[in-house]
Image 1 (tube, helix red, strand yellow):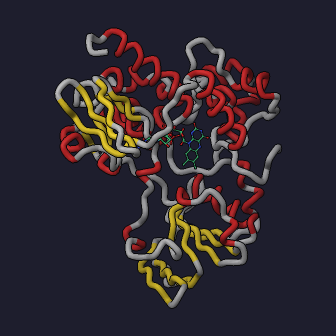
Image 2: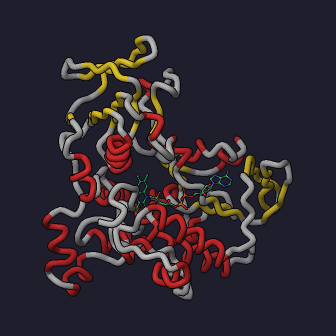
Image 3: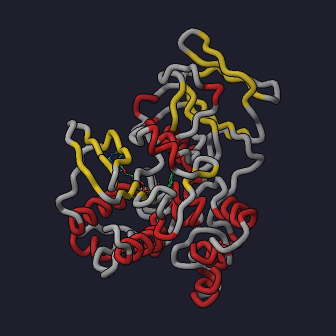
Length: 356
Ligand SMILES: Cc1cc2nc3c(=O)[nH]c(=O)nc-3n(C[C@H](O)[C@H](O)[C@H](O)COP(=O)(O)OP(=O)(O)OC[C@H]3O[C@@H](n4cnc5c(N)ncnc54)[C@H](O)[C@@H]3O)c2cc1C
């Protein structure tokens, strides 16, 4: 596998790695032709990031990269304040601010210094951990991928997870249905968006249909489609790393410049650092640029905004894309391949609306 030592995307399929564009001119193939870059699936992360940047330069060369520090509702729209103090007014606003604000840390680690415990999303490189003992909590993709990178950087790593087993993606059954039985079977069972297992994938690819199902069924399907899992290409990279599963944390204390973690099986570990691969929990109140008043006026369920047609929130003219849209439009919204639905639904809605 190319770039086996780096990050690669967890979703392996080419079609699910394309960012949507209406003219089909900003594809991975077009990027390869324009840049001379050569790669296959799973797409190495550095190439995917460069593809995203190329896509942005082609589609939006005058992108304003300043941070938005405040967004509030005003008559006739939204007032947006940028990091340098400049203020803008817009009649409509689309929030696509990603999941970084939603990084979830178990409360046991609340009072620990960041030198002792950090979230996987806090790191771009694990080189500061060379020669140090690191305990990784979690058994999903961000935990397992961090473990591989820590291990390869020369840290002494151990993994502890609450789940009883790791769900490895691209297992025998999935590989058979995806490729060994031919494209007719694959196309029947899996949509090109490739989110969710056989069959469910087709439903996930149709958010308008999914939304018509009873709430309880939507919730069950959402959990089934995106349960914590590890990409198969990690298995070999983790062969020599100790992994203990089915353990819950009972206490966390500091011991000098180290941290002691105790588990419900009576074991404990005293290590240099705990890396929390504990995932993300959508809670839009953690978007700290939303004014309190605007934040309070968005109708929500479990931290997710309740979105209407066109991914519009209960506040007229305010739309939300990406992971926050998953409660309303399904887990496809959390993935790159969700851009095909979300961008069209948003643009159609805005084009038909009197409020432009
Ligand atoms: C370990 C892991 C593996 C994953 N693997 C895959 C995969 O294989 N395939 C896949 O499709 N998805 C994968 N995902 C999900 C992936 O994160 C999303 O598909 C994708 O990044 C979502 O894009 P987005 O535009 O919604 O958010 P992001 O890519 O996070 O972009 C949000 C943007 O908003 C900007 N922003 C935030 N706040 C502000 C502000 N206040 N002012 C200005 N700008 C702001 C940020 O700087 C950023 O540029 C993975 C996620 C994780 C954690």
